[in-house]
Image 1 (cartoon, rainbow, N blue to C red):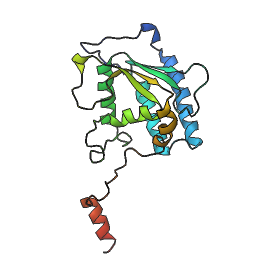
Image 2 (image 1 turned 135 degrees about the vertical axis):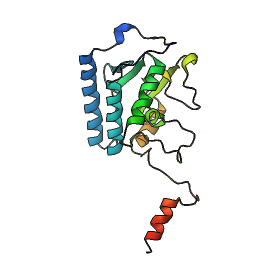
Image 3 (image 1 turned 90 degrees about the vertical axis):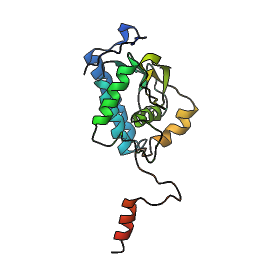
Length: 202
């Protein structure tokens, strides 16, 4: 799937880093097998495993991003064996990922506005990337900013960082359901919840 470059696009990555179709497929196989093996080892939930596999498929079809595998030993607890994702056109990447999320019917990237009222439609994509230790670097050009408050996907690079966040927080992130609706303590039940409660007594 080919995306047009934005009018202000500046590719900060040399052409030599772009992958051929075969290289992209080979990298995809390694990442997919790793995600599956970490689920089998109990490191992720089934739903989050599916989310990471779907995110991988999005990246596999994205012509403006290049996946880079780790060189040498992988870090302990590695779920996603990519050292970085190089984004060649930040706005085209954002538009592409947003389009894929909006077209997806699995619910794996659905942002519940009740749980995340300040988050954008791409929030779960960002959550998934952060859940495997990826952190953004180099904000995209100001001229092509999406213009949405809190948009966190508009970056030129995502790089794995083996810091305290990865070692202490990532494990719990990979075992939670970030798309499930969670009612705040003390909040009034929704109409749907009220119907379910009344149904039990009828």
